[in-house]
Length: 267
Image (cartoon, rainbow, N blue to C red; front, side):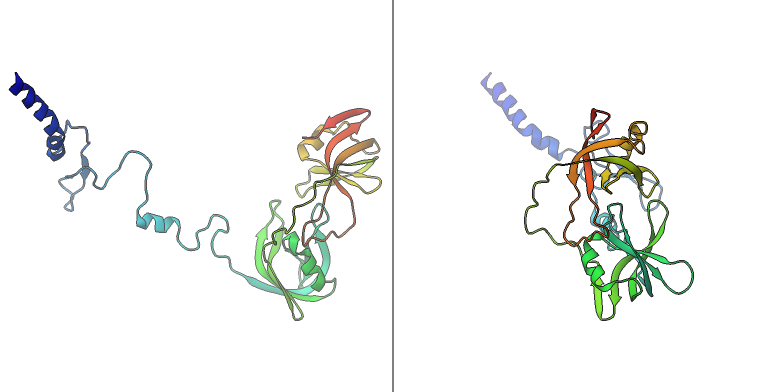
């Protein structure tokens, strides 16, 4: 009995080594992977762990990684972009929906004026060198706005001996102050439209602009008609570093609206 027990224990201990040295068969747990032979006739069997499809998360080889992350293939910038230079006379200074200076028209002498755009944080720098009627050269590329409008995106601007480059905004050196809730009451004299023609603001008789989301403006169609009085609680739009407002207008981002004695939370 002792001899039989020792033989059983020995067989159990040796079984993993025997399994590791055994060749895979059609009935084994490791599937056989067929690889086409060079002559195209008889498939060869790839050993376990060799090339072929594996279970789990797919991995890229070195060649695949090179194709995925090669130069000029960046999802953010879309690769290489050709730059061109246009020269002409500055026409009208242009601002965004909040009257923040972010562009101007450029008259090249013939045809339609070119709409030049730049990031709003460059407003202070551009305003120092650009005036209506001044001659400038702008290097950049043509693009289309979401509404289909053609425009020229500035990469650099030269006026006389001064050149302004499209540099990223600087990091704030101090923490911004906690916004203060403000209240304004007035009559609605007009609506502000976004570039897609949708209402995104209310213009009061004291020139205060109440900024509201488009889906909220749709709900206010019958409540906030022109001539009606409205009370707004909201947070003033503050200029960030480098920005310039073309017109000194108060812009409130609405939080609570009071119309005909009824309060509405803006979300």
